[in-house]
Image (cartoon, rainbow, N blue to C red; front, side):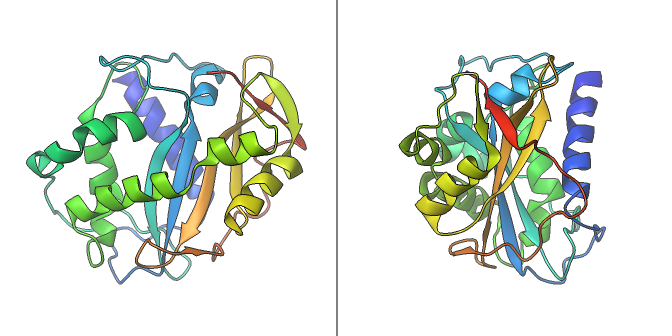
Length: 229
């Protein structure tokens, strides 16, 4: 439970860095922030113990971290009491385990999807119902292949350091939009690529320029590590 709470707190810190939240507000969706993470960085960050799912370690890839609605300078959360219907996701479970896993210890499995729907999905329900929310996230994952974009630029998960500019440039060239890169630090204090955020329109289908990016805080150094997986 302590590990789960720690993971949720880490995520809260990350999201708070984006903007001010509007608790319980569902006044509409202006855009979606689609966040992918490199689990190799999650597992090597200082103080983290990583556990693999019962189905085994997924293939190396950036995986979904969240699909967060944004509106008028806020990232609303916990919008209403819409219950989570696990039965709706049965046709998607194989894809979700592959593209939206969690390595949190102890294993929380479906609880992470429940958490994402209750916290963020409920605030997008004017646009996307539960099943559509998860389907759309999976579609975006198929559309935005971060690992492939980096590989084309010779940037690979080999524990080497790359310039932050080269990482951003590789993704921008592939998708014609600038990403936001967030980093964490390994046990040696190296800044390493952790999360990549791209923004989509209010239907979560078309890439757009992010309406807001964090200011006044530097998540990454000028050179960042791409850890092996």
